[in-house]
Length: 547
Ligand SMILES: Cc1ncc(C[n+]2csc(CCOP(=O)(O)OP(=O)(O)O)c2C)c(N)n1
Ligand SMILES: [Mg+2]
Image 1 (tube, rainbow, N blue to C red):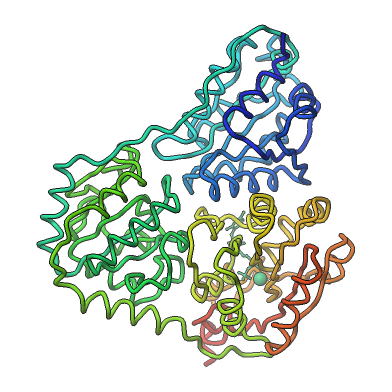
Image 2: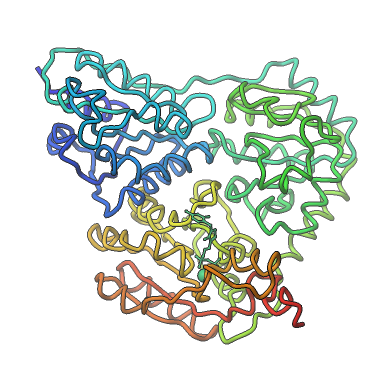
């Protein structure tokens, strides 16, 4: 006889969970107690936002559901942001939420919510356990939904009496994501479409990507001299040093790559939803029937034709699709110049304009490009600082960028916590801003508690610069709600027990970075920057018409 909590934890174990992120609550004590005897490492966070974002990053980096445990009402609602990101980013995740006993349901008991309703529009699926005997069945269903088709977050509410009850039930079987290769006829049609193309562009995006998928897609692109662009925050899907890699379709998109997508005559999307960001607000590809010939490969048939009507829709899991593409008989590449020109544009775009002030973020990024090992993981939240972090970074292997495609602030630090726990031996760098960092800075305590030597680079411009930039564009000189008065970041870091340093000059960054790594502790390097350079190509004074 096992308690509901034990049965539940056993299902986590047999599905390969090795880490779980929580903020404890009395509503799920039997689960916590079962974890006491489990090999699963339980990581206690300081805010449910942090726990959910760390679990989201775990899912993004491993392809297995990130496990997050939170209490009812307030815990669940605070975790919602991580669920939203997992949905938008197509990351597998399992949010387990405490719930009032079944006998109280419907009374709006203490912290009671109907999780099916609350998370119905946020998660891929959300429901409540009804009996202890059916826990293995519910958990198998939850894992299966999280990893199949377009991966995503599943929310399961756990009534406390169900968790405490005992039952003699058999475990479920480990869930394996179904695999779906593309059909031979679809591949033949793709070859025909490629053979007619003159200006093809491959666009890679999320939805069950693996390291093997990366290698195969890259091999396919190189063999056919095809240019390949990464969707927003999927920059680690292709080795950026490949002669086929031509850049990222992200925010503050480079004009040259935007033009390549607009001018392409054939777009082969492998994964991804061709969402608002990679299509520049649905303009580079126009819904519903873009002028470009569109081939869309996606594991979820429900995503095919949802926004864009593909000329060829291939419902296939991405590793299988990538393997089939690599095996495809080569097509005579009539687009070698088109690819080479796009690659040259990407390389030219790595060159920075000098930045005002004493600290130049372009130079910082150039240093990191040389210094970071290929397997270093980079995380971020949201803000204009990410434009530097993305445009000037170089990713060479899959599973090294854990950034929110949802554009959620506060993601970077908890994601770095998750990444360092997944990869204890790797360098993990979190890019954050003064606004972004403060949103989740309590997780610095988590990093200290678990001895995670992440390096946090806080780009401090004294404002929510992204919003200020839009504000100055739309309403010049009418600044409201975007100024920030900040804490002393290095002192704050030291108060948490982390290493802290302010780096005021470009030439000091290298030594400071080495010092941070050598400290062996979580480190915060504050980078004060001149607010004039509000984005790599945008000056505040120009926005205000003062130039
Ligand atoms: C959770 C959340 N709240 C608000 C926003 C809107 N937003 C996007 S970027 C940004 C400013 C971020 O400020 P900071 O971290 O200082 O970066 P900066 O833009 O100054 O480089 C805001 C408020 C968001 N994306 N996510
Ligand atoms: Mg800022």
